[in-house]
Image (cartoon, rainbow, N blue to C red; front, side, top):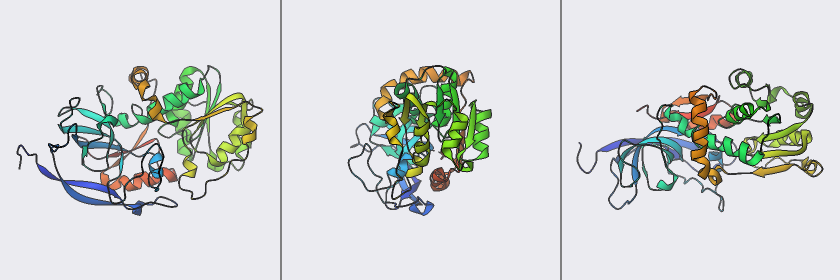
Length: 348
């Protein structure tokens, strides 16, 4: 029944069971159904009640499934819905910046409806001429990550040699296209023939290889970069990083975005070739996208025209339905996704 108090509806949720050690499994999450009133409670000033449309599956979420303190982000809470970035439609609001019918992206719950109180993480969606799911991809955190990690951290120049690992993922596919638009020579690594074909034929990389077919990563990099690497966009860590350091040029830059090969390991792998940073004067810097949110308007001004002109393409892997969210998230660490992994909760 509809009343001023708001309708009470059922709310399907993905619950985080308990802290995870070792590989993430679908059974570390479970689906349940609760109820929710579609109205922001009166004591919840600035709260926003949303219907979730698209949810983002990101590798960093694995790190929130450990019990830790003192990081840039808090751990997930066992027994509570998973939280992550999503695109949603506002159904009710006590916040001056958001009204019923607005579309937003930001931190929300893995559920059909969410009451968002931490509204400082939200962005209003103004341009709806592009797929709404892009706001958790190319027009959201992964897009800004690629932009900041490439332009701000690497100071790239035309003609430089650029290598990207996990190159067909949410971030890598964009770094490669930005580098090509700048006039760089670009090679990417990925974990299947389909992904390698995508890099070369859809994203316009100069070359690409399947790291699983290379017994010697150092030899592979020497084959693709006989003159060495100026810029390495680091997404995987481990053995790949070790091989890259051997092949960096003098004054090369390594932008450390993530190390997905390490997230499921209890004991991280060591890196053995770091001494090469010294004679080669390599600059290696880690970064968090949160430090660059002030550049978001500038980034949108750059990327929206490119999308509309077809100069940049974006590939998404969309899992349909909240019940398929656990499989979609665990699939990231087995390389099952091709492109940005999204869960479609509703196509409202």
